[in-house]
Image 1 (cartoon, rainbow, N blue to C red):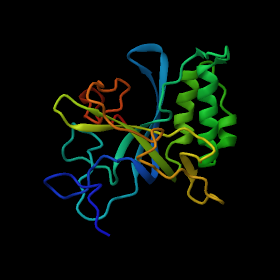
Image 2 (spheres, rainbow, N blue to C red):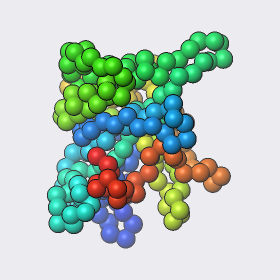
Image 3 (cartoon, one colour):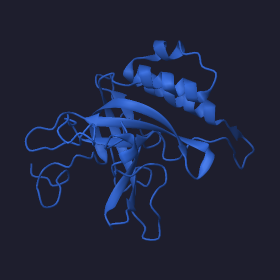
Image 4 (cartoon, rainbow, N blue to C red):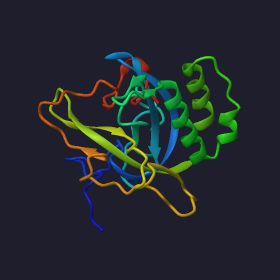
Length: 226
């Protein structure tokens, strides 16, 4: 079947950045990132890579300062664990939401997907930052999993439209992550017409400040801060 969804204009080759939809991915690392607009709000970010791409493919450099260095074999991207940052909050009904508790529950879900719940339960940390550092060591590089990737579109300074990737919220409709060999699959099917999966760009909307863009960051020494 012919498709242009992963092609870059002009070259015809597969884009080095992963897009929305259902994919088989591996987690290269996990970061806990403070949002620049709110010191109390954090994003759990999965730095993912697809299966190796066959044929004509030029993946991002793992070290952008070494032009002759190793490149990623698959498409890569940064995916926020939730469409919204984790933050302490009080709902309209008076119920209180704990940032740290919600982060812990998210990591329980991820650990069960990758089969590392016992190792997760063995973590003992004084702060959520310490806990997430330990999670990175335990829950990263555990093999491929199935994922449903949603996104919010945004336009950069050059006028290009990019995807700010996130995992759609878990619901009765299904889960955004699932083990490859899961029995009775309950993985969400990506639906571009579902606002919980995809939010098209609105011209008045500014670029996200949550690190969802995919322009190389020179200070990190890596195209994707992976």
